[in-house]
Length: 188
Length: 280
Ligand SMILES: C[S@@+](CC[C@H](N)C(=O)[O-])C[C@H]1O[C@@H](n2cnc3c(N)ncnc32)[C@H](O)[C@@H]1O
Image 1: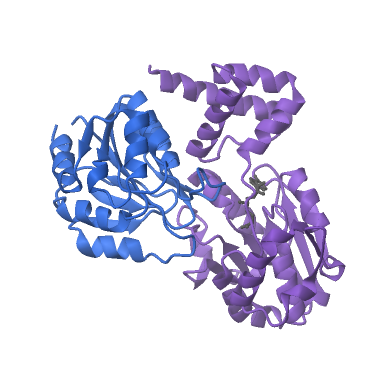
Image 2 (image 1 turned 90 degrees about the vertical axis):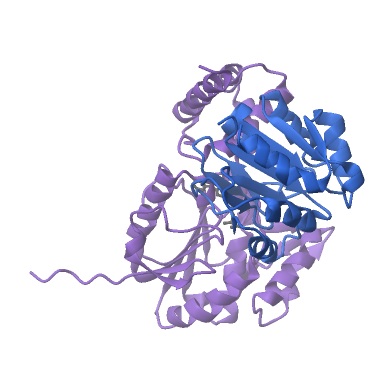
């Protein structure tokens, strides 16, 4: 298999965008998916429960030091950075915000890139800032594949635009097509 | 071998060098965070290789001090996770109340906000006079700040709201005095607190505690190191004493887990089982 993992970053409008992608992936999707969605520090785990209820995959809040399992979806808890360890476990951290964000998409993408190298797919979705653009570039620099939501289909287009400008992604796709492409890539 | 493998070798050697030269032991810390910080520092310094960084910090103490700051995470606040403090008040305080003398250890206290939060609760519950609080950290810069107890006044709004959500019984304004954009913790809260340097990785246990709080420290440790530190706490706790971890931390990766009862799953409050000596 060419790929071993998927990371997804989203901000404003992310809840719907994530739901659309995760509900379209089959229960047999073979890769683990790590997700950062910008969310208020005091939020509950509503996002995770909502996504879990709408996806055939198991969606759970990431726990520190847990093993990454294929076909599971891990969501960064509110107010914690999510990091991928090279031994394929997850870490959480309360270190400073990065680009005003905690969890930070860049932090997830960069650490995942170091852990998975060319076997990683990074996806930047809707959002009103530029988090994820440096992270996606890092993924691409280490040989991974970048997907960005077509800004025209994004509830908020600055994050996709920034990612396109900075990272020169391999695919720019309307939201509806992202799940299909992930499935195709996952079967390579 | 890939470039990344080489980088990992260099990081291993750097952490060894830091330990040998300065005594700070980051070798068992979770790798991703450390690596990210080191690579960022490399970039800011305009250096090419981690081994260049090693040379720099071996011969330049100030450069090491800056790196140490990079590697440390000292983010904290008063009554962080208010619901935890509410549980502490409701579940643990009533038991502590039955003791003639109370010993509390805050391990990894950072700049002290958590320690003063505890002091406020004990005061409001009328237990402070018979308490001794040991507050420790490996970083002496944050410890100095902790014992000064001076915070930026901007944070007061957040602290006050946390205090109220945590079941505060008085007015938070009674616990500090503000001037020139700074908030100074009231002196009476400091009376029973001893601040000292203690490294959870390299130093030993701390006798017969009734309550240990070590919050948001273990998440930065590998599973093995977590197990070591939980062992240290187990040795330092008296029978039926309490251990409180951060909201995302657990005893899952520790061989000592079965020594504890779970008092609050959500707030990560554990109680050491009372072990009866085996009959002869
Ligand atoms: C994120 S702060 C947590 C502060 C506070 N307990 C809280 O929960 O808000 C982590 C602290 O752990 C300290 N620390 C890290 N490694 C340590 C060690 N080996 N021994 C003692 N303290 C350590 C750091 O210096 C830092 O101040």
